[in-house]
Length: 344
Image (cartoon, rainbow, N blue to C red; front, side, top):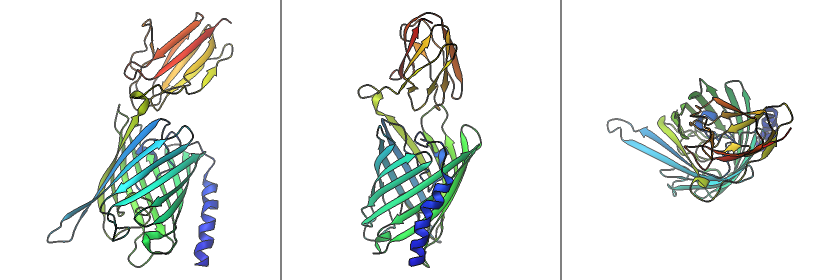
């Protein structure tokens, strides 16, 4: 075991070498990660996330009975880059006495690094994961190191390392793959792997992964060990923007444009960012839609409207007169912002 401990200590160092990349806190889609890695995803503040992973296996002939192992993720992103939640899986093979597996976790992400800690109720194990990611053009690569304090309810600490990547084909499709291995893999334990066609469902906040893998459940222990069976399946992601139904969405920053400069506003995560900008008269404001949905920029008083802004497109408007202009998105009226125009 001393060799394994030395390897486990070196894993975080190797992962840190991969870092130094943009924050992954805004990643919400399966296009950002392969089937068996989180990719450091933490979602968008104020969003309740529900992910449904369902994997199917076919038994030996002559019966060829179909087995299935669903995993349900429910999580919530706090105002800080911290995600809290749980995974619930049935037909789990983590431990024979607990076919229903609960994993409670918290995940913190910052600047290309993500750290997750949690407790697996079935294995009675405190589990952790360190993820590092790097994006170069259409390629997003990531590496992970995992520690399972009571791996598979065996009274033994287990360690795993892995890597994966996604390659974006276009705005709506990506190819993804991953591989992970326990460092002290036993005779009946396989290298875990997964491959998927990742799909952003056009003009919706949902994404879909069509995947093949040899893992059972989507918990840290479930995706660290391969089984002797190839499974097909899917993952479907469903974000709920709670402020759409309860209360008011919190303001997301403010910005000011200097004389002669334009101002930029991003539409992402169903919010204008920033929600308030201050400009001088004659300044042009450009809105960019970085959501997979149609948005509009519509004056509250009805005096002007952008029309539908497609994903990836922009809309610009010059404000020649001082005043305060409140705007919203017509399809998503909880998206609000204010443009304050001052005298030069």
